Image (cartoon, rainbow, N blue to C red):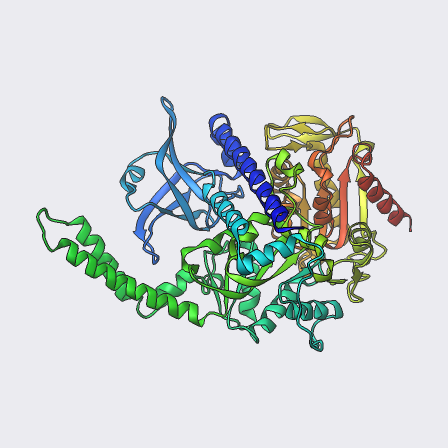
Length: 639
């Protein structure tokens, strides 16, 4: 591909990103106007009502506001570091009224959240309002940064222009160093090969890690080895959770990590390597804090006709800037790994910084435009992930069909298969669970390690089974007013973008899990801490299953061992037992986004020893993938 056509392809990406931006913005506008506050709270997109607590200036000199959620505390929310939020109040006479500023989540810990707000915000208006809530706002910043990154790639000269052309051009081969392979006794053969390929790559390397193959272990080793040759590396991922995970593993190996941004799990270990905590822990910080306070005091007590005001202000500001630069250069000088989300790599703290290598974890979940954000700072890139698992989220169907969902990792796998190393040995699943995924998604190339091949909970158990809900007519649900409701095994639609629910299937899911628990025995479940993940692709079904779990007395002793979430919520996790409620049940054979088979690959491969699928065979098996899965489960039950 010539440079002109590469640039054309990137311009097309930019148009698609613009389309996605408009689609999401319009969806947010409609949602804000039409969807009730109760629904927003249920979806985890709003806290209402709030208790507004103290305001203060944080260590980064941002005005911060602390708020607490006071109701619906059992609902899992979507607030996390870096998300834009707006505050609002609601009255019977005037409805919802939004406050005229946007905040950014600094961190969330349970039902407590800290939001940074613009310096001139009248916090007193919030504190003086009786009923205040907060909701997620449309995120303009991420789109702006992705657009800018694409523009930079389009104009790119030098190293950036070279990498851009290379990624899009099959006949232009990536350059490599040549040396004898290094041996790592604690890695398996394919992991060792992947680390060697990373070290040999001058331009690009891809570590393709199917479920359970030790992708993180391999990546951590590759980073450690790279740091033997380079002073500092940049490590990014699409989500805060993925950045936390890789950062924690690196810290465990004794590597000095500086995490730009706050972690999703707020504990001392995670916070200890954040930039903010390190910054305020620096010996010079009290002096800087005193200077900043003096600046704020001077501004707020300015006297009319004070001729020396500007002189004093400039003097204080230059001393504060000098001190801040000194603290930053020490923090960045000590760190071996700078870690952030892809969007977070645009942080002003990284201005002017250059790195030899960029590592992008979970690269198959990131839009290509996001990957270009940190790319300007580096001379080579290593991508790790699995494009046969969850794709990036794209709201615009037109943009998705036109190719926006195609990731940079997928592009490089296609154009430069020679740069890809597939990890082939998995350490998580019983072989019968892994075999279906390996054959369907990885050309049968993934093998089970001997120590997990026959792992199971019960003797003569079937590792994968499918319970066909079309064989059931209806099920009784005991409602709270002691009446019994008859539920059919048909899906119901519960509101726009909130999804579908199948109550009878939900009841059956709990019943089947209870039967399986009874076969294992209560004492063994508790002693061996056998854990269970209940997965449904639909959020409405997830919420319904959570309600059923809390109502059932039988599961009380095992609550801590059972987690219920969507497929996305289980990405990167594993459980002894996985139960999947497919929900879809209709006469037309409509299965919606379950046609994205990567979701099912993720769901099935979370399990170590047992998978139980509940779904209507007649609806699901009209699709060839689900027909194959049904036949595979039936064959297992016979052997």
